[in-house]
Length: 201
Ligand code: GLN
Image (cartoon, rainbow, N blue to C red):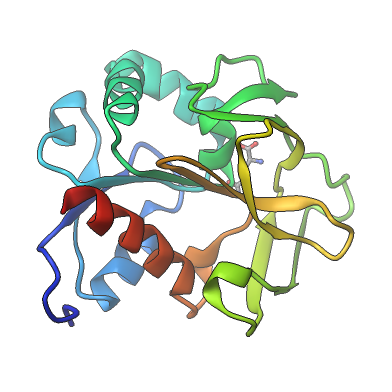
């Protein structure tokens, strides 16, 4: 259902590979219009963009092939809110260790791909994200990247108990190392949508 008094917005979800369907489902449940982005033309008339989890190496190659990479960077620089989850966070970052592709360089952080070790490739744990309230969310990490460095202008929205940053924001760009789209808790989507609505109004 639409929240009252709120402008009708459309969220683009990059749908080259990965878990774009799960993001679409969350947005559908929230009553928010969304469309899949597969070509540069699809980027017309969207108010925000989600880059899902998946394989950043594959997505990087497809972004380049389709010319979506340049167009996304162009729109980001003009203020389009963009949120990357896991592989999406890797693609948005400035520096990637463990991947032989050039990221979009929209989020001044460094990441280390697949750095949680071989045995523990995936795990989940409670995470408090203060901007979403004190009630913790369930953070799901699937072969997640570690954020190894953040520029001083990057806002850290959440840290694990070991202090490691796992949710970050730089102006209109958001990144999470975990997957809010895989849980029933849509508060992080709500946070992104608030950013989008602010930008669209
Ligand atoms: N390991 C993947 C990568 O490096 C990310 C995994 C994910 O998005 N869940 O691209």
